[in-house]
Image 1 (cartoon, each protein chain N blue to C red):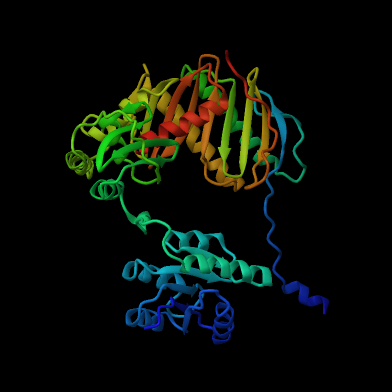
Image 2: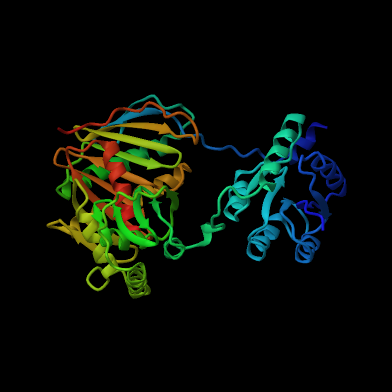
Length: 109
Length: 353
């Protein structure tokens, strides 16, 4: 009966949003990461490019930023500018779950 | 004539009807219990005889419980209604309450649940604790104020619209004061009436409140309705739209805001720009950043982009959308990130109202 397995559709797999952080240099190369290995590297690089571009564009618009926090319904991205590169934290959000600890934001007095 | 209350029980399952008839027979007030197995039959029975209470199943063929309840609410506003279901879905619960049901109850399964259910039903069969209006969820604020004033009531209406809260003081059917945010008296009253949706509650009267509104409620309601009519159907161009100008004026008074940029899809020029020397450059950055993070959200299946807060040594910035428009807001650099997020939401709600 094993051949019946040939006709089975592969079970769809959902991309789990990871919790962790990674650092990138000014060229977008990933230097260190605590993200799980199953998370696609091209997504990590794509995220880094978008974050670095946002920091650079803000500086060009006379609005230098040192931290960017992006909110999605199921994910919070916190990015800190580091000498042209960035340290990026990913924190998945679950509805009705207790608030996850995230890096404290910079406060300018 | 029998003075006992009548209960109509509606369910498409005859076995359940029999069972609930037996359960309801335990009610201390011994009401008359009638049953119907379809929505059409139940409506015909309600037309024919006066009933105090309708207990209605939600999942039924042809006409479902929500349909029956919406018809009943319009045709028999005094009838008390209970939605009884085995469908454990919060969406149905909120929809049923939005239709004005008095009670939403999952079909009881244990002796204790049955006892609690019977106690609730008995209280619904009792006399009204105090007179009041029913089905107010479908009324506008103008209707509510008019009803309070016409009935010569004395009360305080507390109205909330998102993060905003306003109060209207009514004394012996006369509007005497109002406040909303930093606004007072007539200005506050007219501002509250521009809110499109929200919640309200009636608080006890406050006879010590000094009177600051001296116009009649009719005159003020007329003014507000005229203002709403004039703003309807116009574009959001702040130069020609008094509503948009008024929103901008209110937003510019928000504590900590340094600039505001409003961007419409498909338009190169910023729709609204205040407090910026070079709005074009900022608009270009905002558009590019929003597009990139929206696309990232789709790639990650993280849901639609909600907001970006950027913190900087000179000023902070927030990117968010509201009512089909993208906003870039500049904030004072001394504000903390949660404050930026909270104030951004407040500004968006102000714009929307």
